[in-house]
Amino acid sequence: MKEIDFSKITFEDALIQLESIVRELESGRIKLDDAVEAYEKAVSLKKFCEEKLKAAQLKIEKINISPDGEISTEPLDKIEEN
View 1 (cartoon, rainbow, N blue to C red):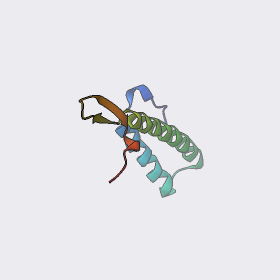
View 2 (cartoon, one colour):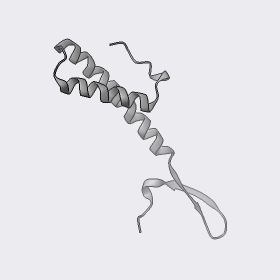
View 3 (cartoon, one colour):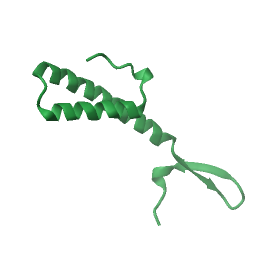
């Protein structure tokens, strides 16, 4: 398997590749050396996906407008459910 150029891959493409590798490994029809290489690639893809998700989560904020019209933001995960 060739190395992944993470500067040219999207989250969705990485996830598709990761799912494909998992299916291949679960099938049990892969040689040991190939399985080890596929596992290493899967670990890299998983890390990439986790980093993309974390970055997206940090960008998501709730916009608040106070009664006097002042605008502020707060992280979405701090919003209390009613």
